[in-house]
Image 1 (cartoon, rainbow, N blue to C red):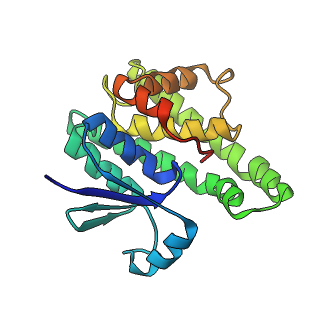
Image 2 (spheres, rainbow, N blue to C red; image 1 turned 180 degrees about the vertical axis):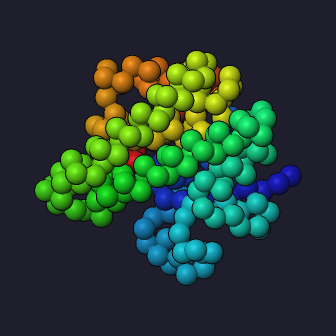
Length: 207
């Protein structure tokens, strides 16, 4: 049996999409959650000095989106055709572009920036970027008309974006009552039968 070990902090963050892919595939994995102190000790040994890291029978894979794609393709959540796979990858790239803006706020929460700094990042960086990001997602949902971002079945792109919307809801960048189509999409993913029980039981974290 293949041994999977996912190493990340004790938070949802960039590891949660991988965790949910394991849940969907009914595949056991070692969920190795680090404290900040443990990460600092481990950091020099990591391929790029960062997490998440997925270890597959000792073979290390770094970079969150690469890990997601690897698991999605292995477990059948990458898309049904090469075109669907490309679309899913593209949506995740849009998410990663937005994340570069969100980090100005999210990292501030983690590393203790002042409220003034957080408010400035919110208004000047993240809120404008979120509007562009939401527009891309809504156009894609309108295009598919299935409730999913790609084709007619759940893909890793849906999971990654829904997880991100949970974070944006927690941090008050996403207001479901104002974004009906995104709210409907978000709820659809959260109610995926294999995920619902896991999501209801998981430990809460803002990010």
